[in-house]
Length: 142
Image (cartoon, rainbow, N blue to C red):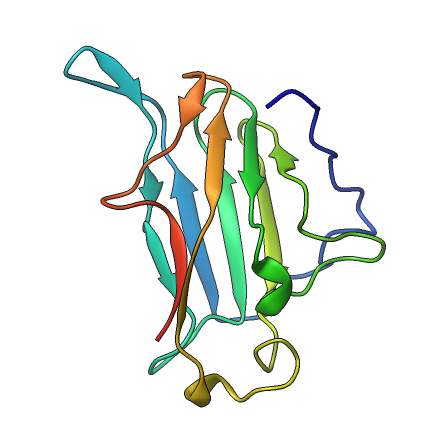
């Protein structure tokens, strides 16, 4: 990534998480087959179901800065004032960031009427590569 990602100011981030919160952990690096890897746990966050999350929180345990890019998140997440999801978001090591889930998909459609799977990316400075899950990180409905 050639241009630095903007960091969120306190007024751009949601002030308080709304429960239930789905925590996504960005793990410390692990060496596997001679290559360092960071994992996203869980790899897929399901936004519909019996007890769907109202907030998604990403916690950085990688040992370095991460850049989270959620290019389609305007459809399903709320963002702070003056912010959009078109650029990656910096999250320092040991820090978390959270966003609330929209009440309606794209503010228009009831969640029970929606099916999608959107990939997102997590670039990790500690390994100079992207994090992985058991698949690419993504948001899913159902």
